Amino acid sequence: MSDVNEYDVIVDAREERCPMPLLKMKLALAKMTVGECVCVFATDEGSKKDIPHYLEMVGMSLVDTGETDDSGFYFVVRKGE
Image (cartoon, rainbow, N blue to C red):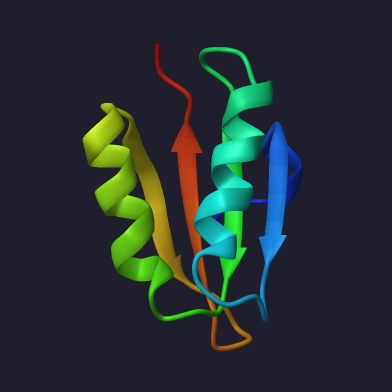
């Protein structure tokens, strides 16, 4: 994962249960312009399935994903059209 300062929006959904990480990401994307990046931090296991599935449904791509040092994970999404 790169430096968090390079993202346009950070969504911290750690310790939040499904479906909150996905909903917070969707709210962030709705306020963003095309080409901006959001980084979502989550600890809910369901997010590993829900977020990529949602992005595939709406035609957006996952730029990066991985695990964090605090037993969570992150998702980097660039807003598409």
